[in-house]
Image 1: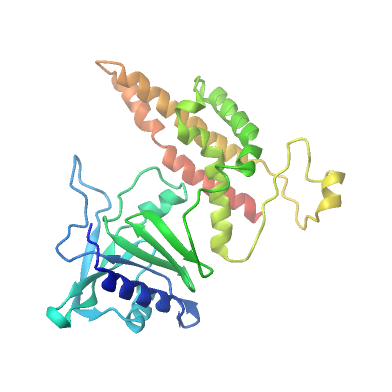
Image 2 (image 1 turned 180 degrees about the vertical axis):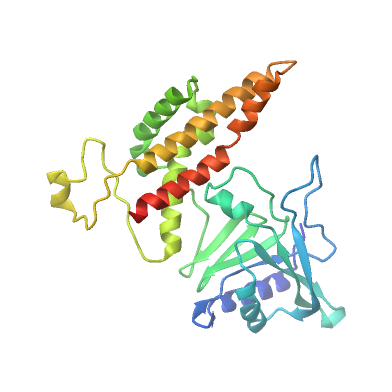
Length: 310
């Protein structure tokens, strides 16, 4: 991984920080800047079949110096969810300077993985990345792995989601276990959740996805979780909160259970096939059909949106 000298690194942070404080037509300047030389490969070595979403590097006609103004102008066309603004040190001697020379399109796979909308993707190039998602906020990463973050004038280290550690996570333990048992029953398999982290975390990922979508809409919102014994018209609940619109629907829960049961079926078939020397065509076809978990998850999200719109 290319690392700049301290003076160059200080200049990179200085430009990125001041650019984050600017706006373009009233919108905040958000971006991801990668310090990576033009000669460094951006795609991982090809193994097996051709990659469906290759990483592409689009060179500018002429490199431009990295300044607050240039970064502000370029940011709107470089969607930080999928595009890195490539920067390197150009020139010679006393004329060496940081310059923007290309845009690197890594695709939406990683963004979708972070929202649990897909299970695999291609890693971003191994490079020093400085990103901004709001005024005065910077995140320094090694590729896709955050190292340190500046927020509210303070340097903070990345923390795990409260859904996975601490008292909030403990609140959901029984609910997650119940969903896993129900999914196993529907799939007709016996699965130990401790042997499949993606299964044990499915419930929490589902909740996290809803929270992320609420945040992205930018209209505010809150989720209230109560035990099954408490109905939405329960007198105890009505004393504590006022529900403007009641949506007594179990569709989100059914969508989650359907996705979990499909994953269980897929895992069970895969394990049985792995233990065999020969495989029947019918069994292999069943595995391919069960791989439709991604389509099932997309249906789950559509179902959730449909339920919310009612």
